[in-house]
Amino acid sequence: MVLPIQLRFQRVSDAKGFYKMLNNPNFTFFSAKPKSLQDEIDFLTKNKANREKDFEYNYAITLRGKLIGGCGIKIDQHRKHRGEIGYFVAEQYWGKGVATTAVRMLEKIGFEKLKLGRIEIIVSPKNKASQRVAVKCGYKKEGLMRKIIDDTGKLNDGILYAKTV
Image 1 (cartoon, rainbow, N blue to C red):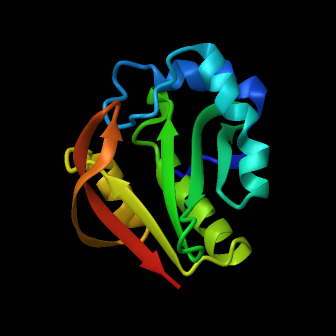
Image 2: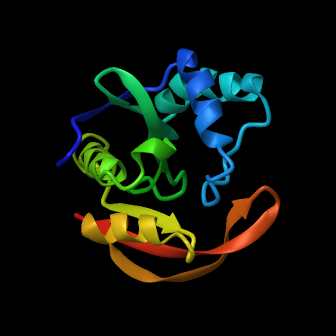
């Protein structure tokens, strides 16, 4: 059963929920961990300006109005036809198809509204769940990227998945 999730632009009022999700000790593959609630508020405050600059488009994932995750598309500033998808889901919703549905929704935004020609997903080689999401959504594995993921100052390898129009 596919959960009826929705995407909406992130709001500053999401800060507490995102802060709690991102600092869950079981989030081992998502390196964006705000150090404080104020850091998360500061990040969310910049979202509108980042959209206006065509830099990134960040969304809250909601289920019946409840915040259950976040996702976004970051636009390559040197290759405006290229975007990278990222996402995270609250632990109680892992394995329920939320990330897969969110990626499909983001992809539609990326290709149709933002007119991207290529969308990438970069995941840790250890993150089997995100690799399954990429494959289920039709992304092709292009290879291993050495030292591409910045995990709080430590550079780790990532697997590149991509889809083109």
